[in-house]
Amino acid sequence: MHNGKTLHTDCCIAGGGPAGLMLGYLLARAGVNVIVIEKHADFLRDFRGDTIHPSTLEVMHQLGLLDELLTLPHQRAEKLQAEVGGEEITMADFSRLPVRCRFIAFMPQWDFLDFLARKARAYDNFTLLQETGFADFIREGDRVTGLTTLQGETIHAPLVIGADGRHSQVRAKAGLTSQSFGAPRDVLWFSLPKLPDDPALGMGHKGPKQNFIVIDRGDYWQCGYTIEKGEFERLKTGDVAAFITRLAEVAPFSEARLQVLTHWEMFRLLSIRIDRLDSWCRAGVLCIGDAAHAMSPIGGVGVNLAIQDAVATANLLTPSLLRGRVSLKTLQKVQRRRQFPTVATQFLQIKMSSKKRTRSAPSKVPQFISRYPFLRHLFGRLIGLGFRPERPRLTGKV
Ligand SMILES: Cc1cc2nc3c(=O)[nH]c(=O)nc-3n(C[C@H](O)[C@H](O)[C@H](O)COP(=O)(O)OP(=O)(O)OC[C@H]3O[C@@H](n4cnc5c(N)ncnc54)[C@H](O)[C@@H]3O)c2cc1C
Image (cartoon, rainbow, N blue to C red):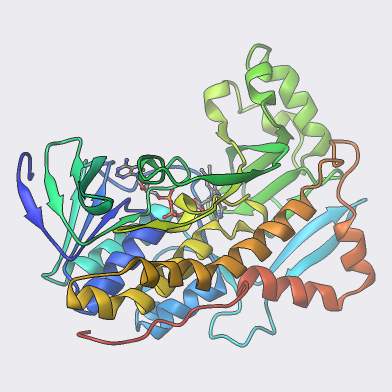
């Protein structure tokens, strides 16, 4: 523990999620001294983004880490499917992507983060401080020159990165303003044990009204059910059994099967939000990942955008960090590079979660895709690779 210590580094990253740890790894590998602070003691959080898309797998390949990563337990999805009117429709097909891995790897996020942390710790110039929360900035005039932690450390650094997720304290303390875009629905996540004679359900949206998401996680089904925004609070005042009956109407599982869900605590709420900072930086501080732009879970792209932000940030900032000073102009280059992929992805997510969509009136997108099959490859590309995929510049030590 570093309680009460004063530390000096080239870059201090608040948040050890996908964005923070990938950036920490890349900077350390390039020879930059970096400290990542993470408020939790470990990476064990349930139902976080567990999807590693082809774009991220390609980055891992470019870094020489792919083969080892894929030795960790995971499931592969070469297609994403939806069931419409009893008919199975392929919504996204990754089979023609010009990358090494033409699939999404479903891997618990904590395994992925543990892996990144282990690789980063191999560099002496990388430090991960867990159970260490961001408290406030250290400032010299208008410029941020480090941060203090809730545990009493003072960390001096010419650059602070806010990678502390959708409820970012860094963005709040920096006074960065954001725009919020309507996200009229929430998702309730829960798991169901797998039975030996369960059919192969694949991955994607299932059930007659498309509101049910099912993901094969090996020995269990990860299920998601979309509800109206704020509805969970109302639901919780009632009986779980009544909710199970409603769930059975849209789920590919029988009501009897769903009856293992006996308490509201067995459901995890993902409050969907789509927002984006007007400016991602101030002198000495930059936000990336969810801290700069919270994404809807549509397409499961949040983790992958966070990784792409980290790669772009390392590519653009490493030379300045090695010199010990990063200008505001250089920080703005990161936003300029990542603004278009963020805006374009959020635009598609907003279109696909149109306000008019209700429980009884599902999206028309699957029917459209079934009519024009080439669209499943286009969607495969948009989801699997996204807009403007980044390639790490491999400088420094390996
Ligand atoms: C329930 C749920 C389900 C999701 N499902 C998917 C999915 O299927 N696919 C997908 O791609 N995305 C999904 N997402 C979104 C995805 O998890 C995020 O887009 C992605 O993790 C963003 O990465 P990040 O590194 O920017 O932020 P985060 O992953 O949020 O990481 C931020 C880190 O900062 C830490 N932190 C926060 N505050 C502080 C502080 N003050 N000081 C120090 N550390 C701090 C947090 O503990 C966390 O470890 C889901 C999100 C949730 C909440």
